[in-house]
Amino acid sequence: MRRLWLLFAQTVTVALALWFIVATLKPEWLGRSSDGGRLISTTIAVREAEGSGTTLQNTYRAASQRAMPTVVNIYTTKAGRQSPHPFDNDPFFRRFFGDNLGAPDERQFSLGSGVIISPDGYILTNNHVIESAEEIEIALADGRKVKGKLVGTDPETDLAVVKVDLNRLPAITLAKLDNTKVGDVVLAIGNPFGVGQTVTMGIVSALGRNHLGINTFENFIQTDAAINPGNSGGALIDTDGHLLGINTAIYSRSGGSLGIGFAIPVTTVKNVMEAIIKNGQVVRGWIGVEPQDITPELAESFGLQKASGTIIAGVLRGGPADKAGIKPGDILLSVGEKPVSDTVSMLNLVAQLTPGEKVALTVLRKSTKTELNVVVGKRPKMKQRPTQEGE
Image (cartoon, rainbow, N blue to C red; front, side, top):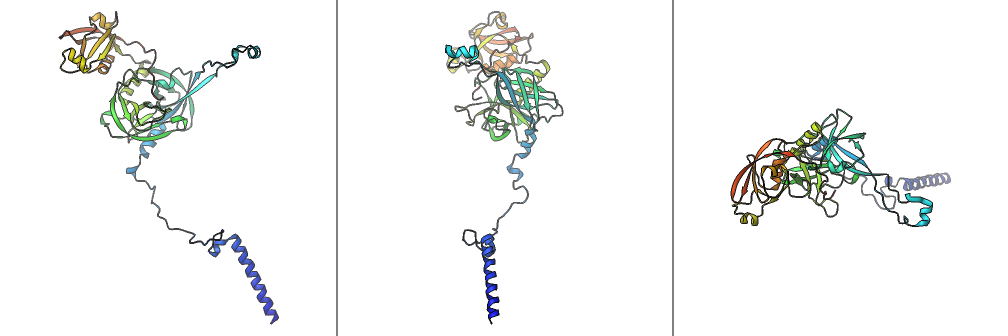
């Protein structure tokens, strides 16, 4: 009997020891949590989507994946500016440090984006991204970095072409702008604030925006896709991944996106790009006048039925228009056979003319229409580009 009690006691002791070890190390085996609470279940029932979990109707991944490899980051190096030192005029400090106390930083780095437009290494970007750059470095989407060489610029449309010594690069496909309408979904690709390649989505808010004072020749696509500093020179694409325009400016009071961004349309991009690659610059026609839009008040004072055309406010002495007999106060109605609606259309029509050719201009002078023949000159280079809003 004593032996049975001893065996029983040993069994209970071993069982209690095992229970203590399990309760300490593996409480879930006993249906309890480690903090003393009771576990309801170790597994909960959830529903998981089959496949990717995203339908093709709700994603723009194909367009993004098609265009992202063609968008690059552009790093430029510029000379620093001399900055005054607070102790420049202190004779004690000048005795030890000399005249180089306020020496400037050797370099300043700026950041923008660009788009590969040819497998041969041609890259399109904004002029203000590479303006005054001493060195240009291109960072490709695959991680490679290479030096870029400036081919040419066009400050009046804020476009520039850079070339890298690489071939068989992924190149973007140009879209048909005629098929684009207000309300179409668009994607903006670039490197905002230097955080890395980013895709944002929006719609086309307006087409043909001008009179903004951003560039000399304006015909912008307006979008609410988020465009921020660093996006300049990047791609605005459609839902097929084709290039609609080059992101160039934003309207902002804080430096960040307010939902009003502007892109240079692909039609302008193509013409400027081809001219730069072929000639190193864009050659435009010029007649040497200062135009002014016709307001309803001016139209009434001139006895015009509608406010179309543009007033010649000034004529450059010795210029093509002056030699042809155009005078201040004349109202320019047409260039060749194409009517002039305002100053923007006049600039575009004249710019399309070839220097050296003769063109007939129809003007209204003292209620009488007169046709004058002008020998088109070459438009002078713009010395300084207009200020970009929200660069």
